[in-house]
Structures are given as C-alpha cells and as structure tokens.
Image (cartoon, rainbow, N blue to C red; front, side, top):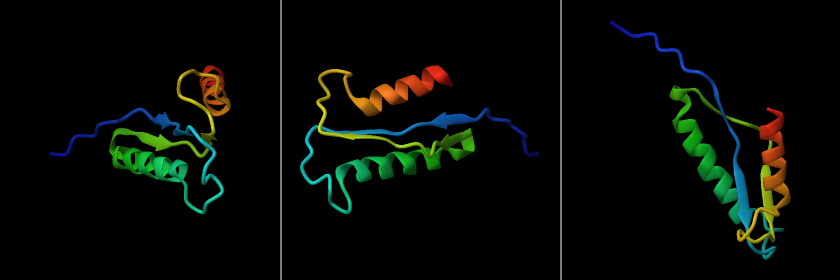
Length: 82
C-alpha cells in the first residue's frame, strides 16, 4: 500500500559569494559553480517539497567577514517581505 504523504513547499534561495572580483567576467565563475551545486542539491530534495527560487543572490568582491553584502541584504529583505 502506497502512503500519500503531502509535503509543504519549501522555497529555497541560493546565495553565492566570492571575495574577489577576479575572473567574474568569465563565462563560468565560482559563483556559477556554487549556484549549480546548490541547485542540484535542491533538485535532489524535490520529493520533500523543495523548490528553487529563480531570483539570483550572487555577489562578487565582498568579504565574508561581515554582512554588508548587497545580495545578502537583498535576500534577507526578501525573506522579511515573504
């Protein structure tokens, strides 16, 4: 007998960061690699209701030492705005 389990939708945002601006103009950057890796993981969890948001939260050239990063602040504001 197959169980019918309903999963609530879990919207997943992907935030990527690179400390330097070096090579950010390349066809494929570390930001792209980070996003691809996260997207693949989210896809692997689709059976649990995970869906990836189309909005991109990518930033290059900002340190991880603090939260003063435009893409991170935009993501946090989007979360507050639901």
